[in-house]
Amino acid sequence: MRETSFQTEASTILFGTVDLERRLRFGNVAGEDRAHIEGVKDTVLDHLDEHLAAFFDHLAQYEEAQGLLRRADMMDEAKRLEREHIIAMVGGAYGHDYFEQRFRLGQLYNRAQLDFALFMGAFHSQMSSIGRRIMARFPKDSGKAFLHFTSFKKVAFFDLGIIVDAMMTDREQTILRQQEAIRELSTPALQVRDRLLILPIIGLLDSYRAKQLTDGLLQAIRAHRAKVVVMDLTGVATVDSKVANHLIQTVAAARLMGATAIVTGLSADVAQSLVTLGVDLSKLSTIGDLQGGIEEAEQILGLSTVRIDRSPSTVV
Amino acid sequence: MAVPVLKQGDVLIASIQSALTDHDLLQLKDELAEKVGRFRSRGVIIDVTALDVMDSFATRTLRGLAATTRLRGAETVVVGIQPDVAMALVELGLTLDGVATALDLEEGLEVLANLTEAHHRGR
Image (cartoon, rainbow over all chains, first blue to last red; front, side, top):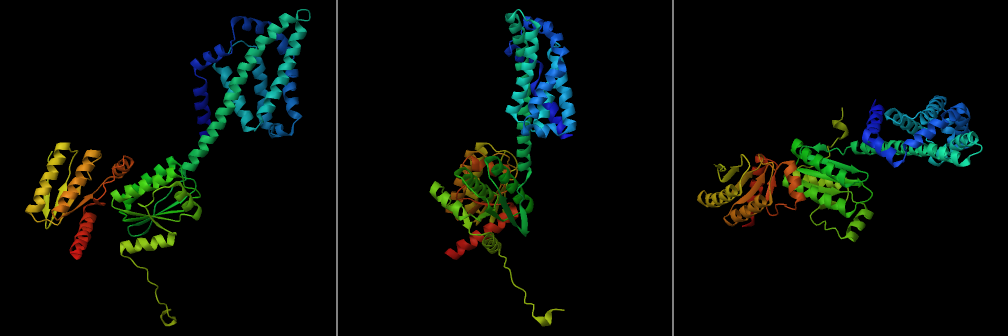
């Protein structure tokens, strides 16, 4: 479901009407080119299977293309789309459908993890195959043949632009989705005693996540009426000056809400690098490990943990 | 809009109900400085729960207010700063140094009790 909505969205962004016209202009596809293409239309279509074979035979030589070639369903679709591709190239209508089709092709190759350079090679093979037929069409006038092929090539390059964009957009969206997933791995504020919160921080802290963490913490202070917060950084491998400043800000904001924040679990490396960076941490109260932090917090809250004496006689 | 100041035992409670102009703030500061002496109060609580925005002037006035009442023998606690306000203040570098803060009125009274107790022990 989600996949489809992403696709439609992307194709709308990339291929709005304005963008179509802009691309055609950039490709310098003029009226005479359309006439040239119309002129070689039959030449190209008569040997359609040969051109398709040039593309897929090129791929078949390489181990890297097996991801695509071994998947029957993907291959069927790829063959169908490539066929439509060539037919549409000489069809003369470069409208929205034309773009959609190339976009789908780009996405398909991306999903098949087709190597980019390999795709370019295969595309070139196909172009050569078509070029040979066009040259053969004008055996006595190579200049004319060249002009016709150039017109055809313009459209081909214009197509390449779309396919490359589709592949890149698809990849970017994968990255975006992954980033979103990482962000959704929230940093929970856990209540362990009455009015005592623990905030375990794990992984890389960037500005975005640090801000989210601070917001969450302040809301949690309010919701749980927390008086003490222990922020545990055991799971944080590196802290730079930006993140350190964020921590200082968080502690200051917590104080404004009437809560004391304790930072625990700074590793030796992190401590060293903070000192080397010259970050002023005098406003933070830091304690070695989480246990120490909780003990300190309990002291602030006036709690104490007592071991219950379970002598054998009292055990039932 | 003027801020109502309530007297509860030896504590003065100023409960801010709506956004304040600079003039209102100064008026509040003068009023509290005067009332602390008149009622021989030991503590002042300023409840800012209703405020969505606090600017540099407000924080400066609150700092000044806390320092003034301290000179007159009363500790000041600011209570009810909203999470968003707290974050904004910190980002602007306005950290209310020297002013005690607490989550809400109840907490504020407790903080005040501790502060004044320490104060008396110190004497």
